[in-house]
Amino acid sequence: MQNKWRMLIVIIFMYLPVSLDATVLYVVAPVLSTDLRATHNELLWIMDIYPLVMAALLIPMGLLGDRLGFIKMAMAGSTIFGLASLAAACSETPLALICARALLASGAAMIVPATLAAVRTHFPDEKERNLALGIWTTIGTAGALAGPLMGGMLLEHFHWGSVFLINIPAVVVVIILLRKVVTNAQAKRSASLNLRQALLLMTSLLLLVYALKSFALPGPATGLHISFLAIGLGLLGCFITLQIISTTPLLDTDLLKQRNIIAGVFLALIAMITLVGFELLLSQELQLVHRFSPGEAGLYILPMMLASCLAGPVVGILINRLGIVTVAMVGLAASALSLYALSGVDFAHEILQAKGWMFLLGAGETSALMASSSAIMTAAPVHKASTAGSFECVSYELGTGLGITLFGTVLAGIYSSTVQLPENLSASVFSGAGTSFSEAISLSQQLAEPTRTALVNAASSAFMHSHSVTLQLASLIMAVLMVLTFFIFKRGNVINHG
Image 1 (cartoon, one colour):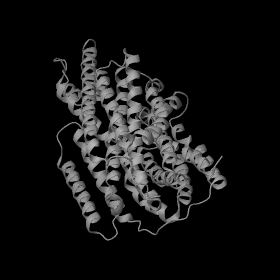
Image 2 (cartoon, one colour):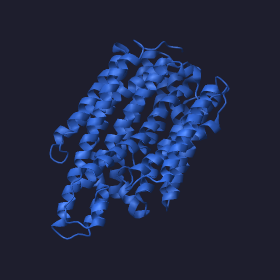
Image 3 (cartoon, helix red, strand yellow):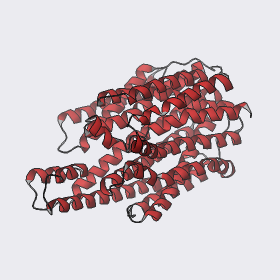
Image 4 (cartoon, helix red, strand yellow):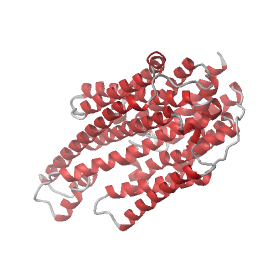
């Protein structure tokens, strides 16, 4: 077996745990609320801190990878990832778990650019590189889709900490393989790490996401929430200004001049927002409305994972034959169609229809993400492979965090504006049940029949309606993105700088 294919095996072992951890807690959250006594807001931060910290650190870690070589980065990142996984599994408070997830994201931010740099370095031939990127994209999307399945299956038999402990054997295998089957790539350039700018970006993102989550909570927005939003926007404006005027900006301006790199990042961002948002909403509906167990909810999403696994390598071949733009547009069209169809499906009774459309959605999203990977990595010169890879990964992780936040906020807003509650409720119950579905279910336990049943039915109906409208909006976004793709990408594949 040639060295490049050995390297691809190592990449798979490195990247899979990272992608799994982005979504593995979706079905574990109810257990964490009981075992760790985590509040709703703490649960959201436990899930969101991982992609948001990754989004802020990926670019400086990509620069560090270009300086040190991707093998050293992969070794260091895998070690941190393994230690953080152990810390997360042993956490006894929500704050401890949030901190462990932040450390986990730091290790992951070192691993992911290293995997893309390895692909760019070991596969100089464009056709072989597109095939390797197809496998890389498959690992990323299938891992994210398999997260709830993995979490649900482990939760059926083990303590919730097992969802983190499974990372440790993978890390051990990666370190052994890195020492035995590959040699380090020499660093190509010296670059400033710009950690201050990275911290500025991370702070602005965390404040903005905190503000968005706060606006989705019951009651009017407070002055503190508005202040966080204003400060977050101000810091983000400062970050953008620094990228324009600084002599050593965090973002590589030469790469940002590449039209297909910017287009690829934008495509990946929107695709991940819709993919993760749909997965989160479906997991909630299956467990909260239809009373699926965590394992059953995870298995329900299996067709999306299977479609991603099957589509990835095939899409790499299609890109070589048809080009990036055609594959991206077909993938986005399939995603828009499937999201619209899923908005009208009864997930409890129309199971075959739901799984069929989810299969198409998985294939469509994988095609769009694969097209973005090919555009970015083909346009990037070899000596900036880590940095270019980090751009794409930022869009993946930021899309994951924003998908959770935006879909949750839209869902809550539609629910509160459309729910039709029974008229014989007390003022306190009426107010609480009108703000969120979970609050309505909790308050229903205090009521006697038939009022309890009436409240649960009304809340469930509003939640499913909200889910449907949110998916229709997501379908519209994907359709608009499909049209934009025709204009924002250059025709044909990007020139190879290798």
